Length: 201
Image 1 (cartoon, rainbow, N blue to C red):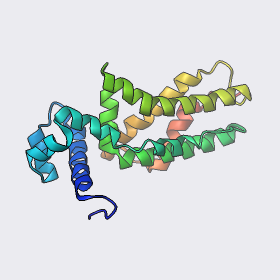
Image 2 (image 1 turned 90 degrees about the vertical axis):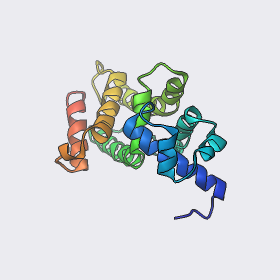
Image 3 (image 1 turned 60 degrees about the vertical axis):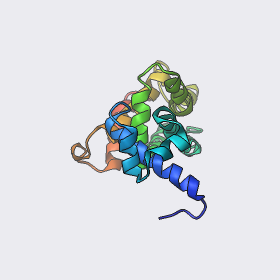
Image 4 (image 1 turned 180 degrees about the horizontal axis):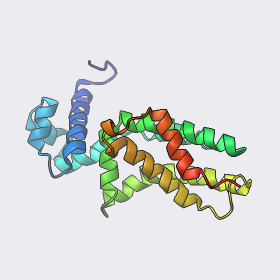
């Protein structure tokens, strides 16, 4: 369905980016050719060269298509922990919000996660724009809980944050749906309980 707010050129660029995200997410950068993307997008090879100048630029454009402001909507939940119950409630709400964002951008999140294992300039940019803001917000939330003596002083807020983020991404993006035999909300509760079960003061 055509978006009336986009010009014909913008529509075509978006269709190419969406096709590229699906293919890159499924097969990786090296496993996808410009011809594959053109076929998936229903356009000719010249269109990709015209709009993006080649495969590498198109790959970068895929990441730029992610609306980073939506990360802010997720992390805004992580504020002002009051007590143990409040921490658990806010962590669950954060997990739900972030999971909705991840699942609506599943192939792109897969691309981001895989790319961040490299040492490229793009990987550094992705860490700065995606991983670090989420990690920093979660770590700050736990730091505040530490200051208020809600959680034990020996808890590493950074390690706890990384554990919660990486577990969520793994379960949502890299574990086959058939292996998740319990409802998503119950899965999140169990993950949070496992990761936070012994942190409270």
